[in-house]
Each structure stands twice: as structure tokens, then as C-alpha cells.
Amino acid sequence: MPKRVQLKAAILLYGGAKRIAFASVHEPYRDPEGGAPYLDAGRPIGTEFLRTMARGLGLGMAPEILPETVVMRTPEVTAWWVPATVPADVLFGDFGRQNAEW
Image (cartoon, rainbow, N blue to C red; front, side, top):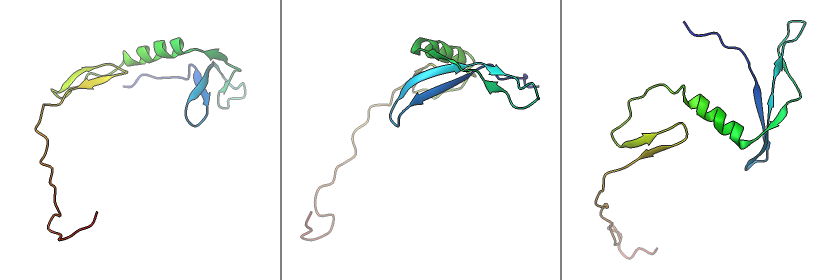
């Protein structure tokens, strides 16, 4: 049976189309009239907080069977190798087309 979970905090990310510039964490409050929880004003958080949180979430990663080419895996990085190969033949010419212009 799954464990019961409840809202502990909300992280809001602010930024433009290309990058996140600012993050804040907000504690939830219960609506006294029984409605949906709402968030407090929040406080700014830094990258170290986010890294610590990401590491903590990674501790809950389920075991996986990975391909033999995976060298290592963490919550943030997957490194793998590929066997050396001979490049495919590169064909030059007109491929059956006479006097083709490129």
C-alpha cells in the first residue's frame, strides 16, 4: 500500500525563456474553511539548497538494470561508452545520375 503524502512546501522558479534567475520556497497553509491549501509569501533560496534537495531526492532512486555500456549513474549524470567502430563507407559520385549538378 502506498504511503500517504502531503504537501510540505512549494518551490517557485522565476526567469525568462532561456534561464531561471531566482527561486523561492513557500510553506503551505490549510484553508480554515476546508478549501485548497494556500502558500505563504515565501523566502529566497540559493543553488546550494536546490543541490541538497536534488541529492536527497536522488537517494530514493529505484534500483535499475542498466545496459553493460553504462559506466556510472547518479541522479545528475549518466555516463556510458560505445564500442569503437569503423565508419560507414562514404559514397562519392553521382549515385547513378549522369551530370548531376550539386
